[in-house]
Image (cartoon, rainbow, N blue to C red; front, top):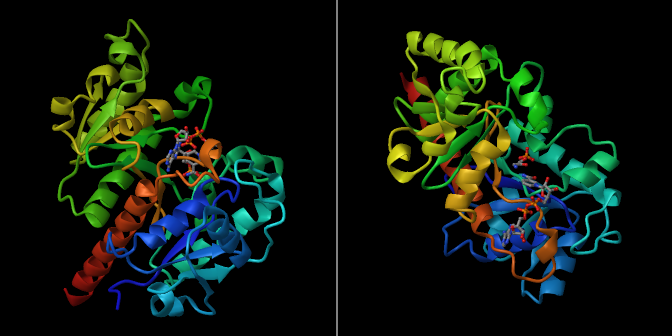
Length: 343
Ligand SMILES: NC(=O)C1=CN([C@@H]2O[C@H](COP(=O)(O)OP(=O)(O)OC[C@H]3O[C@@H](n4cnc5c(N)ncnc54)[C@H](O)[C@@H]3O)[C@@H](O)[C@H]2O)C=CC1
Ligand SMILES: NCC(=O)COP(=O)(O)O
């Protein structure tokens, strides 16, 4: 019997590699000692995928999430979402299946928020086709924050065994970054990240490093002044509040091995500045986790990989790492809650 409630896994883009990865993760359950999880999907989609890949995998529709553990050893538990497999072609994303993709996320979040599931692990979505269907959130991160209620500030963190990064702005055009990177945002992100690393990762006093926006962190204002006007003042205030935070550091020299030893997480002004080093160091071992939500959400660090969908060659490593990280976080939260109740 598992020590945590089952993990809810969303379908992601059905024309991408998500369904294949879910099946491969289930096949690897014993090797990786994975806790019971279930997939939120029409059963037909999972059955079509196993058949197309020639895998011997049974699926089992569950009426209640609590049945997950009972069936997990013999079959992949499916929490049935309405829909059919008609519009699905591996390698092609389609807006016709957007409602299945979105329903899967909403149900996963509801089950996790209610405490029925211990965490939600999301498979990758093809953002462009969801936009065509009227989805007006840049990605999961922002959608999950909206589902969590007003005032939620989601923090995207990507992590592997060598590096953790937080992009301080997420899915926005580069030209918008200097406008949206305010001292207030930086302070909020540092506070949320520090609290999450303490509670969910067990780091007592997390060390944070903040990257500059401009080359050489602005070179004393000669190559941009955001470091002087925005980033440094925020860091000074945070240090006065007791946070262990340094910067602004030149981004080009803060990711080599010796530099990484000096901090637990790097906060970067924009998406690619943060994600390029972490994905370069270990693409297949990376996990995307959203901090600052009232529930646990992790995800693989990669996307829908339409170029390889249906070929049977997608690697489930990152999804497996996401399941393990979600389970670890759930255990730490449960232990923390038990300790605070006992105190
Ligand atoms: N959490 C999410 O929902 C995410 C969604 N995306 C979305 O995915 C779509 C495609 O994004 P791309 O930039 O092309 O990135 P991608 O990660 O889907 O693909 C980049 C390259 O890595 C390979 N790759 C990715 N995952 C793999 C795996 N598990 N095993 C083997 N090879 C793998 C692909 O075949 C491709 O060559 C976009 O719509 C993007 O928005 C991207 C990242 C995260
Ligand atoms: N590049 C990371 C990414 O796109 C993840 O997006 P999200 O769907 O997890 O918000």
